[in-house]
Image (cartoon, rainbow, N blue to C red):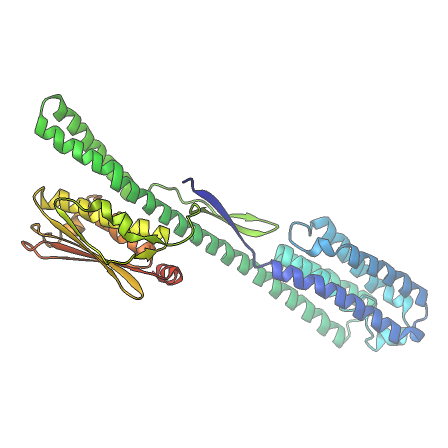
Length: 408
């Protein structure tokens, strides 16, 4: 079945944009409430009323603009900060002088911080430093002198905005790193899957052609030699990597984008493992199975049966044509155990490591790789002169399988 590309979007910024949207609305209401409680103290209250009318319309109309980074453009940020700075500079015209000297709030009050925070989330600490510096200058002009509380508030906004901008930059870098790691993991799993399929199919055929050509001789020997060369080249390619690792991209609106290969849809309902292992039984392969069905998820059942097939291929290739093999299926409460044993000469010490170095990945990929992806295990026990035994274990619970596979 065809495999589909799966796209996952990751964004640590979206919660910040949502919080900023709520902050702008709440601080707008707070600023209007401050004005209402001190309305009688204003010398020109009509200026405040006009400004708050503009502020309400602007805040509510631009809520979609602060929903994500893509919508929050530079022109919008410029106009938004201009609205905040205008409110600060209009305060001396609307409010009484003594209230300003005593440290009374500006017309936009803490709504101004929302504009600065938008700069920080959008562009990082450098943009935040620019916006907060302009706000600081406007506050100093509005107050007329650098009073202690004014300087204190200016420094507080400046430091907080830069800190938030820096945190956003660090979060973006971490997000890209995580997206890259996820894509590397997905590409590695896909490479191993392709390598297993190639080993179980193409490489086995090439090895057989090489052996048969050498036995027949003549032109067949030349064909066998060419097949052997292709087998070596293909094994080198398999061991080196088949799937290029993609680069994690970043969508300004949604954050980092991770593209992985999604497994095709599987049939619903468990599969009886016995039906997949039955074709392996023959004159020299004995199958011992329970009398009741051995249910497993479809993907796990197929991979476990393929691992058994790879183990039997190793028996035929390395133990000789006269070797016998036995397959034992055990249905335990939490897992299924399949044991493949043969009466061949066994595997010499160090031979598996040597085969892996030569690119012969039958045990590493076709057997252990499959079981690892299922959250199970593959144990190989071999004594020279006494045959080889491969024990395959697969958990029955798919959630447990995924959890074990992720931990590994």
